[in-house]
Amino acid sequence: MNVLLLTPPATRLMNPATMQKDLVPAKTWVPLGIAYLTSALRQHNVETHFFDLHDYSWEEVTQVLKDIKPDVVGISCFTFGRTNSLRLARLSRQILPDATIIMGGPHATFFPEQMLESGVVDIVGLGECEVTIVELIQCLEQKENIDSVKGIVFKKNNTVIKTQPRPRITNLNTFAFPAYDTFNLSQYKSPEIPPQYLDLVGTHILTSRGCPFHCNFCSVHTFFGGTWAYRSPENVADEIGILMESQRVQLIYFSDDLFTLDSSRIIALCKEILRRKLDFVWMAETRVDCVDKELLQWMRRAGCFRIYYGVESGSPRILKAANKGFTVDHIRNAFRLTHEAGIEACCFLMVGNPGETPETILETSRLIYEIRPTTMPIMGINTLLPASTQYESAKKQGIIQDDYWLTEDAPPLYTGEYDVDDLIYLQVLLTKNIAPELYENMCQMGFDEEYFRMRRMTNMLTPHAYKA
Image (cartoon, rainbow, N blue to C red; front, side):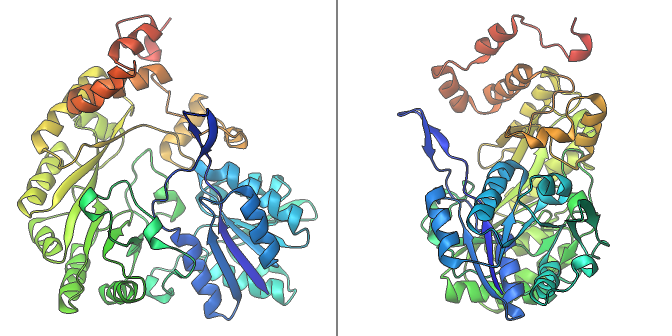
């Protein structure tokens, strides 16, 4: 049986010169999902091809399907790219009417019935699918009943069938390393990489999956069933060594949802990197309450040059409303220790959590000046994502319903307290306070504080609860 695993083309961006959607967003990091599934299938002698179609035209996608002529097409589906995932499924059905089309990934996991109702998806794989895909392909190849395969959803006699849930594998060492043979790593450049490292060949690695915390705006906890699974330091170091030798990798981004949850594991990894003399630079993401002095010192010795922390806000009230589970003092301490260790301390901020006001924005601004992040904070506006606690609350408020995802619109901002203009206005206030150069650029384009005041026809920011 011939299997083809794909990530869909990216949505084209508007070219200001032609006002046409002909600009392709830059590649960031390789799609590890299909790379892991490819390795799992190849381990069981299944002929498997895989492509990141990020920068492919639909004409090129058509040619890939015609050239390979797979028996099974597997497509990854994330919320932001769900429209193109379904378009890819439709194209696959058109070109390969007899192929079995499988959809997986977070969005498909959260809305399997919507995928099946499209009429072009045969089976949805739920959650992590390294084991599921192997069992499923074996059943399809032997023409056996797929009802026994755990963790899938499909239609049978016009009835949606959801099989028994698949237990999580907590020992990630059992998974084969992701396949890389169709990726040109020199094309992948994360926007978080500083200029001095842009010429290095890089990739990202997952040393663990999941997160035990319950931030209201995040769906990671739900996708991974509330559990955290990890790989051993030796197993991670083995993969690093292979990547350095076979792919000339010199830069790694440990993009775990929570890299340092177990500090002893990361210290052991750092020691293993040093013992094997693996000379590369790396960065990671984690929480401010999951680092300490000893851990950071070992990370620096092993080549870590930057850490991104999900700070979100400098207001105690907002941190509590978002259920972050840490305090402003945790933020201060983490940044102080990171600076002292000689590691660049960077952060993500979010505007628009419940209770946000110009006063809480000012609290965030003051904290940023105090903790001195190495780079300008990456700022976003609170967005509704499926399966998060906030999403379920927004459904009860009538802000959104599940059928929203049948549209082609981007995930909406959380408008439980402010409308979109007000949320942008709050972001402008934060930008003005902590990134004056960026704010100046916005002003030059006409998007300054006054612009949004005029749009709202008022000089007072007022929550919906008090609007007439």
